[in-house]
Image: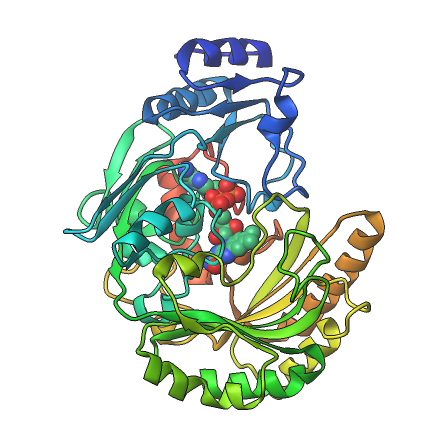
Length: 455
Ligand SMILES: Cc1cc2nc3c(=O)[nH]c(=O)nc-3n(C[C@H](O)[C@H](O)[C@H](O)COP(=O)(O)OP(=O)(O)OC[C@H]3O[C@@H](n4cnc5c(N)ncnc54)[C@H](O)[C@@H]3O)c2cc1C
């Protein structure tokens, strides 16, 4: 077995063995190479490797194991904050692995590990198809799917993870495996919702869906109407058909020039989402919300690619810090608490406090489900702000602490993708137990490091 004692020896070996770019501390381009999408993460790994292909991934895993280092795979760094400083770790970036194949006959997509959602949603949409992508165009397909994957079509079709048909991944022993419902079944279960602690994914295959009827968009109301709008949405969403997947948000739009003028710098309560239904059904379902008189109504028939931008998620790196809670009930006390915490412009440091609609297929475990089988609860809360300077960081942490206190006794479940605190136990206890057994079996020396480790 090869033994590597020093960082410089590890870097030398990496440069010899991999085709992709290798960066060490102090090299030109080091700061760019180590930067995550979330600028709150200050990653200081032993080395950064931009893998060119699966063979590079194998070489990095073999070398890390021999050198007593860990490997942290990363697509974009959207959920990099909980990873820590990455001491004694090779940061394995997949951004050079960008091949996308869509087979419309079989209704299957295949992507390499570094592909971002818009690279799939745009070509799929041209043929009237949609994958189960999230709200942001530049989140990585792999990181999102390994954590579960809640899309705007999720109450109809379930989690993205449970629509994965094959995973190609390098395990800690350096083997490239193809995992399916019939091959490597424990690992296939764990990696569909259990996160990135088990192996480095080199490619994913998943179902894509034909979308003949689709409406999506947002209704904007003045923020001071939040209590009545949120109550009306809550009453509607608890009974809504599975074809509808929506969210309700208190939103303080930053005064950034790249944002549309009609929303820039203003505060709203916003209902947005999508419906796999005819225009008549959509109009009938949304009637009660429209009767409240939104100041902007952009909920309309759209091509599937529009789902990548209805939420107006930031597409450039930002210093974001957030927290989440899956809650059993969205009752009036919770609504009033949210409004008090995040509903007054100028007083709150939160840019957004959001309630995503659960139920439907999110609440039912499908046959053959992976580690994220369902959610126990009616709503998923997410609160987030931007720490642009020290003063904003202090105010934001104060508001996130208040959010945690408010939701502590209401939490019924956790969601890995929305978990940004390193200490979060992101799975239900029985799921955690099985994940820990599988991790101990496939990676007993903890070579593969993830943002939410399973120990
Ligand atoms: C603006 C925004 C909008 C979002 N919207 C949604 C949404 O609508 N629905 C939803 O479910 N989530 C959403 N998320 C959460 C998002 O899914 C997670 O942050 C996810 O982890 C991002 O994946 P990534 O690959 O882009 O990020 P990364 O930070 O690169 O990856 C996160 C983790 O995934 C694992 N990972 C990544 N690549 C690999 C690989 N090749 N092999 C093994 N492990 C790997 C690693 O453990 C890594 O630490 C959103 C996040 C943001 C910031």
